[in-house]
Image 1 (cartoon, one colour):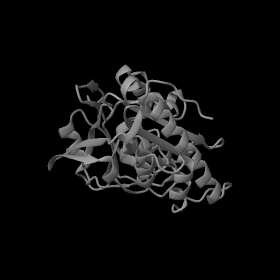
Image 2 (cartoon, helix red, strand yellow):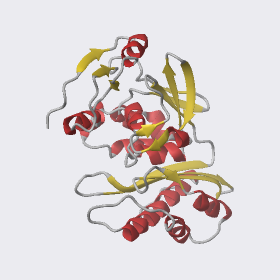
Image 3 (cartoon, helix red, strand yellow):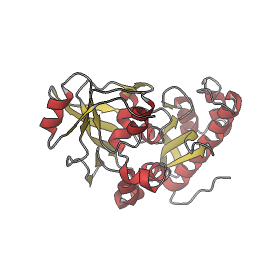
Image 4 (cartoon, one colour):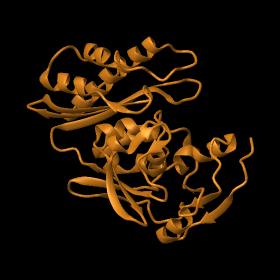
Length: 288
């Protein structure tokens, strides 16, 4: 299809972007890999597209305790970053499965979060790694945690004219490990389910766990019951995940029923957590 008519403005500064986005019907665009498809379907009909792709918001900065990722950092840049590959593996692993090479060279982490697609790989990692975003608007600056950012498919807490400018995540400390695992739809290449896990160990045993799930529910979510079970060494991991996911109603799929989606979720959760534990212990984990 052909998009509905719209005006186009290219912002040369954040101030220009805020001015343009203050107009009724204005919408920001950066990499455009998902947004252009929505325009073509006429799922969205903005009066004006404000191109922020030229702003200087693409740096990756590793501090002593956290990593700052500019909102316009592409998935290709995230995948190449030694700081992310070494200390924030789930983000690097999510970056590697983002579409094809062309998509990874254009699509940005800030755009993925702002579009609030509950099937996006980034959300599992965002929840597991305790990610937060820094935003700016004419009203000022604020910080929003990942678990508060999305309200529903395509909906966030961002106000009109408010832009994500950077993404922040704590570094993994000693005795910590993290991993992302997914099972993909062979037709769309989107995840049927994606699970990221971050595990901190004491004397080699898990003591603090975060598990994020994407592509299964209407919004991404954490498996807090499973986190607690892993930390206390309770019931078998796959059983605990299966019980927790039994209370989740998966988003309908054209060819796969909900029970099987939940089973895939339990399997993927087990794989991600075991890989994170192995990473925390300094080893490697397979996906058996």
